[in-house]
Image (cartoon, rainbow, N blue to C red):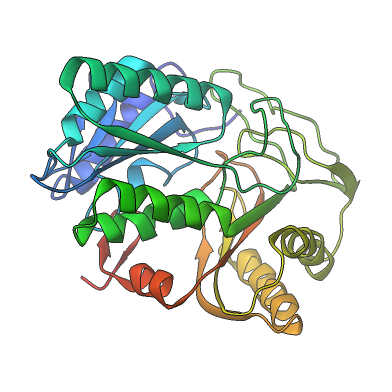
Length: 333
């Protein structure tokens, strides 16, 4: 294992120090509870948006704290959910009197701990909390970490779109309803060329031959649909896009498409993959109105990529285009 770390037990704490030093103009960090806050949080009368999860998926979630997206994000240990006390402290810290929306990826530990934190926040502070769970991965119905589909790439798009709505003054129920719509209208699927290596473990999560790839992996290195011989980018794109379209159903309007790197794939290769994905979608008569290409929800040093397709409309595109200023996304500011 070769990693730029000090000690495998201090990876998350050291990274949070770096985040605060790099982005202290717009973020502040509660190091005791491992929470990244927007510097201005809480804002009176604004719905607070909170997400989080295991570390190792950067820039998700701490990199999406700021204007137009999240008000706070909790960092668990690598690939491990934040604990309820962390999440309750973060909920209280973003409550400006208009309630708090929890955006939760569908992993068993995340769902359980966010639910406990919501109950504690409501009981102890009188804060109204609504949770929306993302479950957009079409690869498998159940996994090592979930009951039901995994929450993956749509989480990024949802945090941006709902973040814009909250910034514009929408109330908690409106934000929650919008989050459910985005989740229902988006699908994702990923693949890997290599495993990832968790610092505390020190070896790859799974073995993959030089001439093999894993189709349908999760963001924690969970196994996917099947292991296949390595294939050209055009074929890999087809293996990812066609299951998404089959599950998503007819698309007769604009889409937002994300070609996401898993952390260890060069941007050169991601652009090759995006060209193939765009070719397939265009061949189906699908219009790509907006796109992202890059590392947005990663799995440490895993080589590979994922595709997310969101069925959109003019309102969702407008919210997507609204100003955002976070370490991970920035435009219109």
